[in-house]
Picture 1 (cartoon, rainbow, N blue to C red):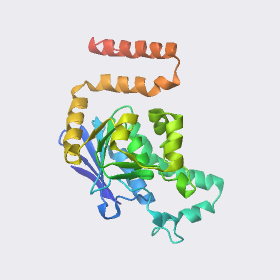
Picture 2 (picture 1 turned 120 degrees about the vertical axis):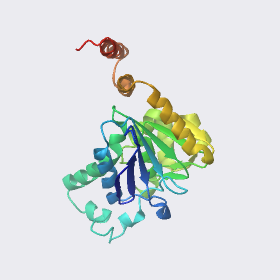
Picture 3 (picture 1 turned 90 degrees about the horizontal axis):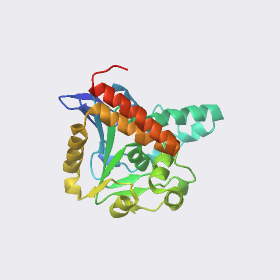
Length: 261
């Protein structure tokens, strides 16, 4: 069932409404991103049924997403949108609000009530790289080309990508990737932990289906508790994490025993 199809984004759910697929649908522009696309991605997150357990993000065509549409930096910008040059002329508060709105398209993928998977092929550059990083897991085709080009353009990665990138590869490697803007290909992405799996392009969809099935095999509440434990582990001390594990396990045991909190 299709719940959304606008501005380069299509949201569908399977018959049981447990798997959602968000597809970037502008392959002619290599799924370049714009404020309208970001608003559509945010709306897709709002429209997700509460029953969805796995959200898959993919891009049509040869590229996952080649990043921000450079039209944003032209004086005319996009129809009906302020150009980024116009935004830069606004106040600090106005600019902060605009960027925060854009970031919403990248935040909901890490909700604890679902697991998100990015199926990445071809180019994943700049905003495309950050969108893949917004997901919990990444399955990559062997032709993938990750690159963070913002610094090379005099900008910074501001679409939520710096936190997961640093968590995955460490500060020094994240700095090197961002500062040089170089390509990270499939084998290196898998070795660094950017990709959970790297497979031949022809096997990308089947691999994502297999991973989705494996995630659905676990009881939902146990997976939600486990994801929450792992997501917050880096913010706690060792002893605090042990306490969090005990509290989560107590909830699971009471649930299995039919004992309400």
